[in-house]
Length: 171
Length: 171
DNA sequence: TATTGTTATACTCTATAACTATA
DNA sequence: TATAGTTATAGAGTATAACAATA
Image (cartoon, rainbow over all chains, first blue to last red; front, side, top):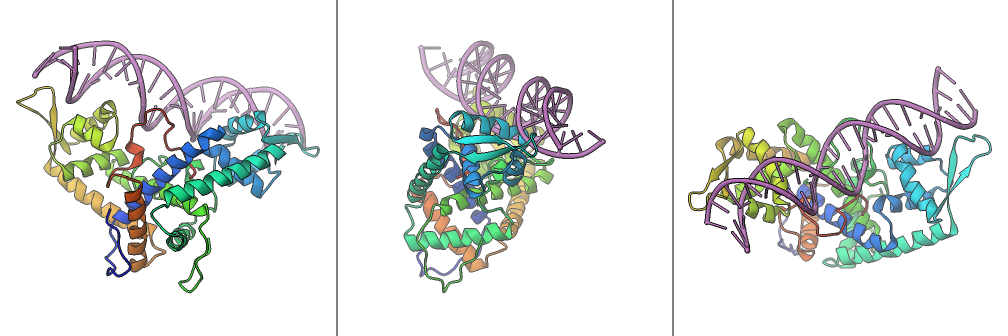
């Protein structure tokens, strides 16, 4: 693609902006998944850990709602995290049906490692841009995300859909 | 998300830029797929038509290479397009094994309709930004795409992977 | 009777492998 | 023997439905 210097006159918007968003976004997701694999985690695992760091002690139902995924899907993901000692299911005394989810010490450390991976990922992904430009990009994307009512920190790939098809490629 | 006014001092880059890219990108892809559904097309179909408009008469092998998908996957997709009279397989006289793929008149018209859908998609997706900001965003994304060596017009969701997992959510 | 979490099942998408017809 | 395209098979990933325990 051609780069645009600041002095270039602004060109009228084309549909390419939307395609570029989908293209670069899918690339970003794939790269992140790859960087995550040495930690033996899949992106949904990381999303769960991230959500728990933000609000520890959620029930599975609450978490599934927050992440927009089916409770049944959560089961296997949490199983894996619990087997590795990153997350703990504590059965509540009040309502013995529900499990409060807590990050263990190891889980908190894993969140730190994920953060470092994410930083390195950002660095490599945005190598073409300097710090100011990256901030500019973040600001533009943040405004789109807000206007499109995307929940902060929740990837659309987690969402459960009523009827429509899931997000297939292209954009 | 908070919006940043031009007067704000540039903040240092955070990993959020990468996540925002994946998040907004996945949203863009999902929205585009939804807008495409009235045309009875899936995103890969649109990708094929787009590629054929650019270089009409390719063989299926050449097309599969260009789009980064397996030839076997292409078969069903092209079947659907041919049944609807959008694409034509012309068997070559020289090498009767290979089929040259051509857009029909209806296929060319469908490409026009897809273009209009893409424009409307872009308009809705980038409603938060004015024309100059959209151009700015496109320029930044284009530089990332170039530096990351993404083929223009080719969505990573099409690619065939050797071993690594496909692009799961998050980012 | 309703709800939490779980298990079981089905469906979609796509990679891999086997096959045919040409070359 | 190799290649273009096709068909058949199998594996992820995830939604839907059925279920057990508790409320």
